[in-house]
Amino acid sequence: MSSLSTSESVLVKELFVSSKTPVQELKNMLAVFDFDQTIVDGNSDIVAIDLISPTNLVPNRRDFPNNWTQYMQRVFDIIKSIEIPPEQIIDVVSLMRPNDGMPKLMRALYENNVDIIVASDSNSLFIYNWLKHNKLSDIVSCIYTNPATISDSVIKIEPYAVQNKCNWCTTNMCKGAIMEEHALNTNKKYDKILYFGDGQNDLCPVLKLTKNDIAFPRLGYILENLLKSHITPAKVIPWCTGEYIYEFLKSSKLISA
Ligand SMILES: [Mg+2]
Ligand SMILES: [Zn+2]
Image (tube, rainbow, N blue to C red; front, side, top):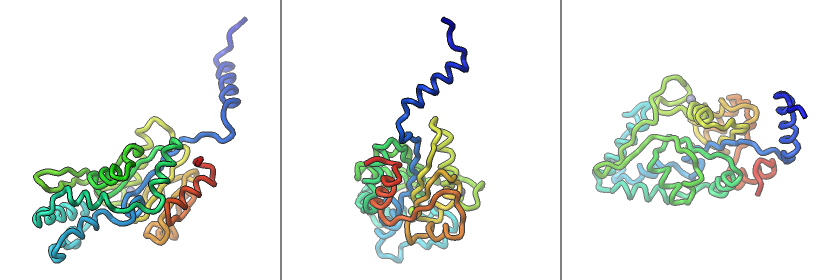
């Protein structure tokens, strides 16, 4: 019996694969989460700033135009000067409450083999410790944020990047580039990206989504408003709770219960 030619064997293989493929085809999906006001209900940097007392010691934002990480470094230096240890700042941030249903949503995505990444202009100490405290650190595959460490009893923060390619974004972070580079650097080809955010710096990645993707702007926040005047090819689903998103994904058959 003669063996199959290469093209025939490919055909046989494809037939075999398609006959075994379940009706609901499994997709490679990526979920990108912003942190402040998306995963957590509040802003972690503001929580840190609120530790400064008396309040007239709070540095003026206008002294640091377009440089959030330098501003936050000044905040951390002042917190040290009033003798609040960095561990206390991290503890207060770790106790921030999640938006309703967000942990449930993140766990459901993970259990449905969706890759989860976080892209945030906060910092690595805040995000990692919050996720750890909320038993979510194992389900997030990458955290893209400003790196921070504790050195000499003060939090030291560095900009995530120095970029000037993207005019939508600040010099220290283009979340659109982060999302694209993550997709390029992983071996998977994502069929669908789900983007969850609320802020101005979530607009760039949302405009880079395709018609296969879904943008989830938080209802009543800046991103949702910006998407009224900026067109993304993605489907746009405003949300108010993680529970709502969970139910939407379940009824759209993108995740199972
Ligand atoms: Mg945010
Ligand atoms: Zn950008």
